[in-house]
Length: 187
Image (cartoon, rainbow, N blue to C red; front, top):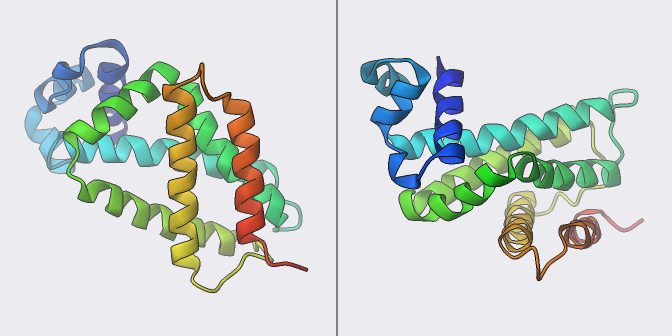
């Protein structure tokens, strides 16, 4: 049921006007009662939060699983995969992505970004452990990951909102270089 609600929210954002992004419309498109929707989500903001986070996490894990060798992922491959996965998540649904970038700041409580970043930091720390990623600077890892998440977010926003000004392939490569230089312990 949760998946159908999230997919319905994505369809509404992708195909309709942002004014139609209401819990009633989401429930109707998902084929569930409004009461059922509220069993899983307290409001449309929490649905949007789930939609944003699940999309990124799904892509990252899928790509990392393809790169595992002896239960480890090379540090530079790990960073490239995470940054690329976030770009791909936005690119995969470019119309939806642009609408999410336009709608999210208007309908989300500002604390959403903080909660979302905290979830991403925890998720990335889990991935570092799961894939035995070596050479990541561990001093102030939470702060380092927070800065990386925000740098990637801004790179994505700029290249998708202004494609005529910022070539997304160049932005992606520059982000990977920046983050690798920042997160990888010098040898």
